Amino acid sequence: MRLRVDLLPHGNYPDVVLVIDTLRATTTAVTYLERGADALLLTSTPEVALGLRGEGYLLGGERGGLPIAGFDFGNSPVEAGGQNFTGKTVVMNTTNGTGAAHMAAQTGKHIFLAALTNAHAAARRARAQATEEIAIVCAGTNEHVGLEDVYTAGVLAEYLLSLGEFTIDDGARIALTVRRGSGNPLEALSSSVHGARLHNLGLGDDVRYAAELSTSTVVPTLVEGSDVPEGTLRFVAG
Image (cartoon, rainbow, N blue to C red; front, side, top):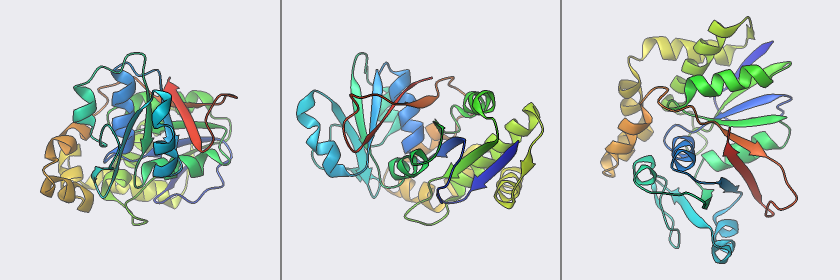
């Protein structure tokens, strides 16, 4: 079994993909489903999301860390954690994470969203589904590598290696080195460029929330269906 870590999305994924955007899309996605959402629709663009506004969906997303005009929510796991989404479908579009999910879905057989908060559950789910490769894909920030995502990839890789034998690539070796040399999760996330930016925007609580390790067993899982709106990917709790 191969274990691959892409420090930025590159595509060409033949098997299982774990998509990471720790600050904050995949962390928020886990929280929406924990708080009762029936499904998440990750859109290719903000315009696709806004076009679904009249369908009874809730919209959540951001650009530059801040909520998108016309959306109901930003991209805050703390904000999501204070709501009840039972019976609701949440449409998401973010600067980096939703795009990474769309790239992974072009070829991947099984797509899961992973964060520190569901790291161990996501790793176990990936291991159970994989037949040839697990690719851990870091969304990054504006096409630059993000320490927070690489650190999370290292946590996932470390746990996966405890579950069985893998051949690993250089990306996995880099992620493992970062994981083992960056202190605890909060130190790693807070010291990242994106983490510092969120602190400066007054969103430090989101960074602290995202640094919690394996507090959830919810794994957002891509599902197909004829009723999925064009330009969206549907994820449900797995």
